Length: 434
Ligand code: NAD
Image (cartoon, rainbow, N blue to C red; front, side, top):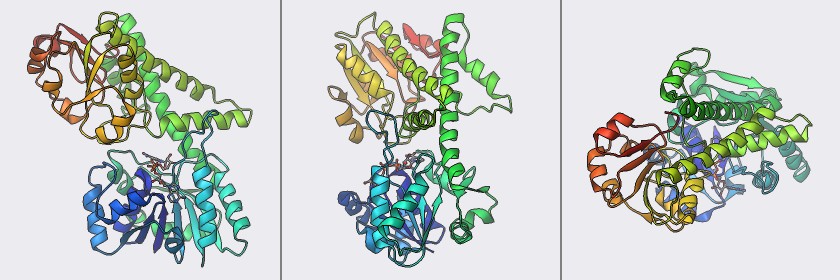
């Protein structure tokens, strides 16, 4: 099967590489010529564990190519996936479909034989029909179907998620498109991964409902964490006790500094907007968004308290700034709220992140970037554990405390315990919900 993948970001690149590993012939296209040049040189432009090896293998096997020529890639492809960005539109929370529709027009002009145009990007309900109309009106002779195939991979575990998905969702309207989609995902059918075939609207809705539900789950536990602090309960015990209930499950129940990332913030905003557009407010989702903002603001207050009421003149060491470990993605990371608040309050902030520096330097002005946590803690007034990279999970707390001017730790991921911190010589240990 020949596949064109339009958009070679976190989702497009991982999907393209994995489809080629299924045995398909894939051309990954991006309009960012510099990105394509790096890919052609064998360089992976994002940090995603395992992606480099898989990419190299499939390029060597002749199944995977990169190009900035969309028309040439689409010509002769049986499936054209759109995996471009759908960020929040400035001002109103809508998903911005500018890139989607521009890609649809370009595809329309390039279609030759029959092809299925598949939306992999997360798009509001009704977008696939809009794509269909855009293509049909730009090229009335085009022989095509549309399909909705939302992606559920998690950055940091993207390959595993793509190769062993909880489910694949395929929204289609024609038997021909269904046939092409099942051919593409045949390796997963053969291994009994659930493939759910729905109409277009349901497929689009599943993605938003899933992300809004996960954002709700996290935020619910973050709110419980706040109450735990008031009543003297330990949210770690509480989330374990709650998560062992099979109806609830233990995932996404870890209290922390609020959700961020490239998906939850924009997808909750888009779902809320879809509700408003249909005079059916998504009240739970709207509340989740508000509470999540409050959680992040509460973290800033926690840190200010830890600094004795003011950041002014304090030296703060921040461990981890990406929105979660194992990715270099900084989009909507809690650090983007928390670090500028400290810098703005007059703190001298030192930052360490195993992969975040390239993205983070422009986003976090006025901080110093270091490599070694112990060196970064030298003379500091506070260490903040913000992203729980493995590198920060087994620190020698004694050595860390010994180098600080005032050994205080704010562990916003609940990695350590008050007892361990105290034993190591920390005079203050602050966590979330404990
Ligand atoms: P991204 O910003 O990393 O990548 C998008 C790419 O598309 C960019 O490289 C851009 O240059 C390219 N592009 C835009 N218009 C183009 C065009 N006309 N032709 C060729 N290339 C074009 O985005 P992403 O994080 O990969 O997300 C893509 C979509 O997948 C979004 O809708 C997102 O919500 C969804 N999604 C993302 C994740 C994730 O973890 N990042 C997970 C599931 C779903």
